[in-house]
Length: 353
Image (cartoon, rainbow, N blue to C red; front, side):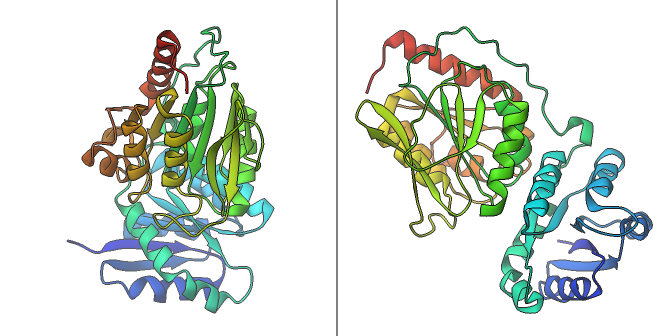
């Protein structure tokens, strides 16, 4: 198999050197060039034809976000963003992921040499994952999902929608959540994302969705018409407090290699909501969520997987499918209507916990 051809774009000569040396240690990767700004990178892309681009955000002559927009419109290719863990950097990185960047690497703020060394395995894994990703033109990144009108009568707080996602999940979740009506059943979401990013992600979703989207708070009541995003660095669980559902957050060890973990969310939903729940596993690298979704199905919840053709990375849904965790796989744009169909069926059966 030919090596993955990578072009590095960063205005720091030191970062370009570190990334070049780091990625070159893996025999499956070949760094074909390194550019100090997007203007030079544009010409290098034409001549070097890379498979993956690593892209800094703040650069001279053209910022990374503007360059990403041009790439995704004119020559779509897998892009891994390199972003500092500042609030501004987090907001910009979330925008980049919504525009079609496959993944991001949180650039260390101090101690760059040691910081990047600690990130070696993560960076190499994300470049390899990006090389296998399905990348679409900017105009086609977000699946066209028609908004579902309110009025179906989801007045009971008993029904729960639980969603898990990883690589490619930012744009998938934006597409999915914008379709839900204001009276949707309560939604809990675990998306693999660093702590600094999740507040910006929830805020961005809240601006474009009819449902109220927020970063989950420990102990808060789970209500219809709301979506709760797991904070980066904390596991999100659904729990009971008397007659009400509530969010529970904790910093217990990584599960399936992640915190927050989709498995943790799904298992808690299986226990707390059982047959009143619908579980959805979206695009993502790895296996997180498959075991938890299987527990949901065994608890008589409805389970749905995103199909291979619409996934950026068909990893998590494939594992879920192969172990029998998903009842059905669907293209992303068909999932919202299917979810609400199951919720109406629950209402019709009078399912309670």
